[in-house]
Length: 187
Image (cartoon, rainbow, N blue to C red; front, top):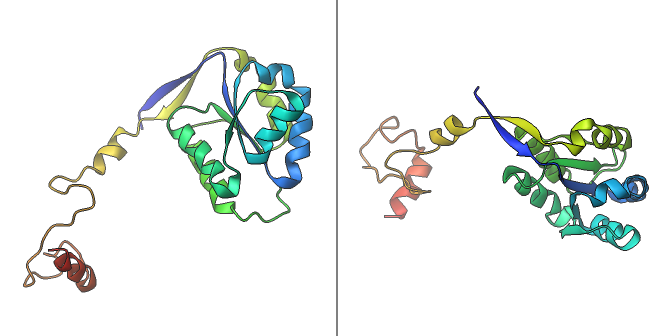
């Protein structure tokens, strides 16, 4: 697959997320890296963002709490090129009500080749990297072919073609009889 590049500037856009049992650990990590973090644009979910702002004075863009859509907001910003990397301190021993959202966030990070730190050690490695203070050209797959396959000629949005009742299953475009009846009701 062909590759494109997305430039990560000298000032990085960092998402910070911590599950309830990991908020204090993320706070302690941020405290040790406060000067460095202050040089970058920070985004954080719910309580994590309020904690970093009130206790460390960091300028943080607050998003919703994870279970209320904050993880999805970060994922959306990743796909729009507004987040350069994610620091996610998750609790592997505690089930989360929004595990599906966390999994979706991690999937989007992989899709867009975003560095993700899932614990203090990996966060330390990312922020201590020489790439942290330089412009970096992040490689991402060229998704233009994937996007173009979604453009179906003659079908606009979610409209379905109007079909004749006498047409067979294959001629119906693979619609089941139930799907075909729904198409007819829309006429």
